[in-house]
Length: 275
Ligand code: SF4
Image (cartoon, rainbow, N blue to C red; front, side):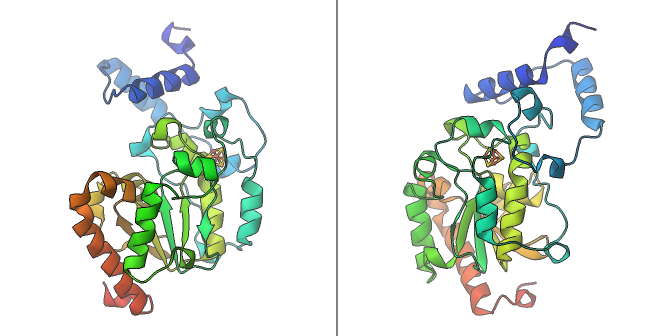
């Protein structure tokens, strides 16, 4: 066995996460290393559905599903809603309690499952909980959450009329974006949430959420402003309220997205008027 092959995936992932936390965005690698990585990536991987149960598992197993970073993270959602039976949202939430399917369980205070109307027509999805959300166990409760509430109110919606959740239910350390294997581990909960609620519109809040749900690397500025096909329904990407707090000049575009939402609601979710 060569010297390189003795390095575990766990060590590599830990090193990459540490480097990214320090601000590293690119690594210098040789052509041979790229070829070896491509060969490894082309090998078949187990389906995400196999990771549905919540039994504890060791860290080495937790990193075997993928070493891709967020730009490659896609939500491995299963069959369409019509093909699968739904279950009460409360049952899904109960199933998530105590989950240790990925490393994010290690640093969380609370699982942030979701909040709002269990029969809402609109579900808003962010990428993951932040500090305040982790402390309170509720999504979008910090400054970004307050702005989100105002955004909803600006088009006549109260927070309690929609449902709000995240792609991963536990806070990533230092508010980093979720890694691909974390998204994959948590995907069954979002799958079951959407199946239970059966919304008419999903709103992806921010680039990472939109890219993960739509399985694309296209940036949020290009994705936003129009409805995309998402499973049996439609998805509207828009800016994350935390991004708007940092970039208030983008509120005009955000307002356009909100008005589009309002027009859709007023049409009775008649997408034919928007195609
Ligand atoms: S992020 Fe999701 S899969 Fe990971 S521990 Fe939390 S609930 Fe489980």
